[in-house]
Image (cartoon, rainbow, N blue to C red; front, top):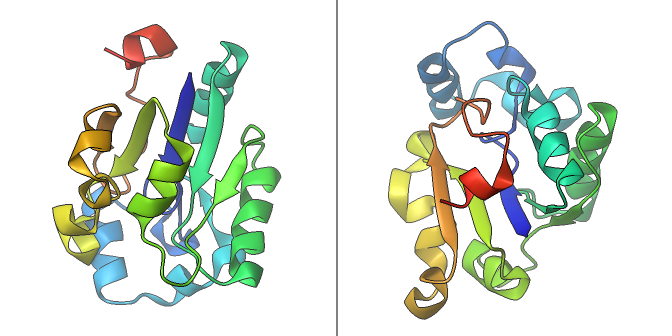
Length: 162
């Protein structure tokens, strides 16, 4: 099973969000709080790394999707994932002219986990909304609250797929 998970807002967040509610974190993004641009200081949301490691141990292939588009910024996100012991997995990003939908279609995950993008425009900004309908129908979509994390999702990947 291939699980694609969006990074920023879904499993990692800006350092300034520590100790804040999901709503406060979203407001910080809307107000362009300084730490949202310091990608090296990003931290996991809750136990996201542990959850992904549980799924990886059950045989899931983990693929990450970042909002970063510059190679040096992508490398910074890769460093955050490594620093906090997220499981190994390919970190995807959009090349110039690509959309999140294009990247997702190239990966063809069984499951896509992303947040609801409330701070940047909602549904229209979500990855799944950019995937062609005929391909979208083949992907199990799990939407979590922005900055709410994935801790509440089941540990068993067979339950995750239902």
